Image (cartoon, rainbow, N blue to C red; front, side, top):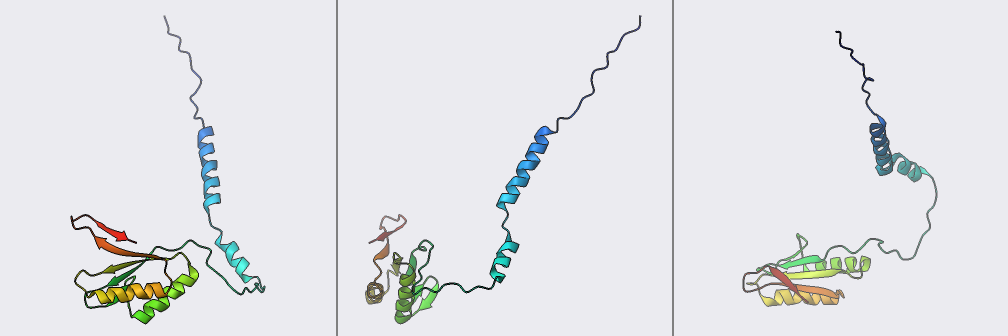
Length: 147
């Protein structure tokens, strides 16, 4: 007796989820792309922008400035060696841009305290209100700041 074999419908692949994912990726990349050509076209338009008497930065204040006073009295502001007058000028310039700017003073434990006192006085003269002094806790814990 011969066996009857029923042919099932042929298997098909459902492409709907694949198409949905492709469209979502296209939308994601379109939204995430920065259109630099449009930016350049805007800059090429000839116009005269308005002038203001005072301008301040619209961004948030930067991290606190770090002033290191080395053992020999050298003053280092954010990895740049400066004198007291240069320190004052730099602090005043930054203070004009960011009124809430903070400063951390770190003095070498073996340095002459007068050098640290001069730096603190310079910060006060530049009207820095957020002034911290970095110290190390004697029990070997991590460094902290005093106000």
